[in-house]
Length: 161
Image 1: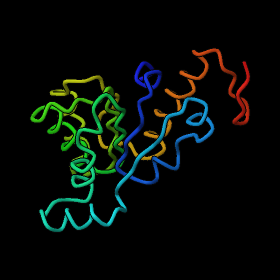
Image 2 (image 1 turned 90 degrees about the vertical axis):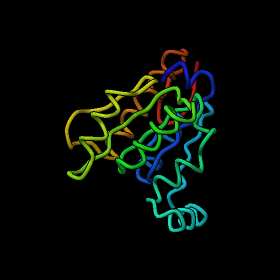
Image 3 (image 1 turned 180 degrees about the vertical axis):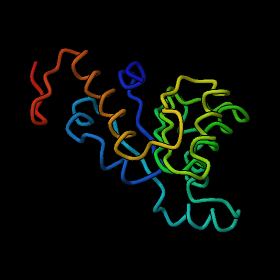
Image 4 (image 1 turned 120 degrees about the horizontal axis):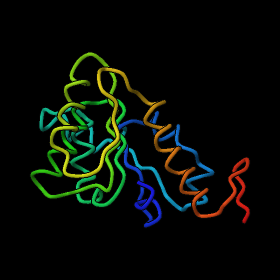
């Protein structure tokens, strides 16, 4: 993940709560961005037409953009399954999958599947625990580690060497 950030990788997520929880000052220092399509009207339309969740439609819409990027899944097990399908069936391989969906319906199973089949590095937690704070914290830890590793001081969103 840190190497991906160094190479300019962006972060793609399934929900706005993760996007808003990721440190804007750290992103600005590194020049990375966070993308989320869950509210996109075209994604909602695609989901309805295909009879799939908006999370699946969002990951499909991202498609090849996910190549060598960081994907952070906090909410939808279906989004995690779709990212894995894209990697396994279409050869679209993110640099890192942060798969931490929360809940009692499919969350634990999707994370087990991630651990069993992922062709790329991943970060997850076992069981039904997870959520936006954990997914955003993982992203922030990677960003802060990367900022520190590159001899930048991160103080109140200001950069200094």
